Image 1 (cartoon, helix red, strand yellow):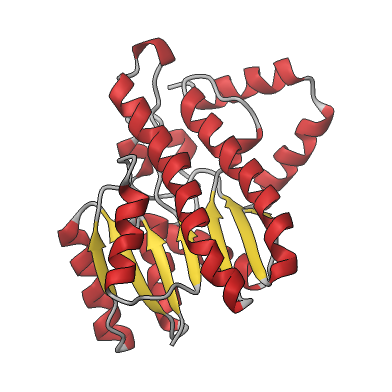
Image 2 (cartoon, rainbow, N blue to C red; image 1 turned 90 degrees about the vertical axis):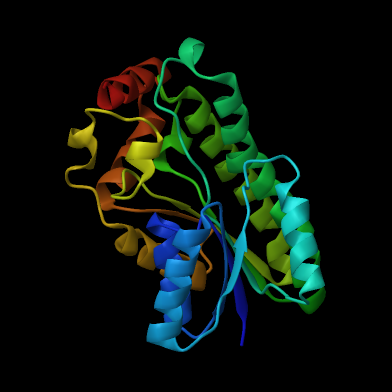
Length: 256
């Protein structure tokens, strides 16, 4: 049975991806901060798919968390066939008012841990000549977003890094897919402190819909997949729009 490591697997898109992989007969390795939530996901998988997942409670926003995670995998003799870097969070705020520790944790989680896990797990995939890496970015990756400045910048990093990595690893049998969802109904809004922003999420897809889209994109070995025809259209039109106007539009859309 192939194994899939999923970060941020306790809720939202990560949880739904874990359930989907279990349905497809992969053994999920569930990683997130909150142990009770992980246990709930694990129970769902056991009851519905008769697979015993592995639970690893770990705060991935810490700078050395990737090394700790991989050390745990090695001690348990767990080999990863698919890596899903889903964990991440945003902070909707004026940059000069943001908590600097929260900024650091966001950058660690969204970029540093993701990069380290790719670096630490890719060699074994290359050695086997098989593997998938699925990185969850965002439509925020395609333009600067005022009041979401750091978050959008971290997702731009994920997108650019992942595209380059895809080019490097594809000839070696390892495929990297980056999925860019827009607003999604999950805990993201609450964690990002996006109060009074219901208008952005009112018609947003459910987490399981984005998870299904991400799984299919990975299986088709797509390099970049943007969820939703509206998001794809808006991203395409940015190529022909003055950058200053793009930023103004982004600011207006995200205005709290």
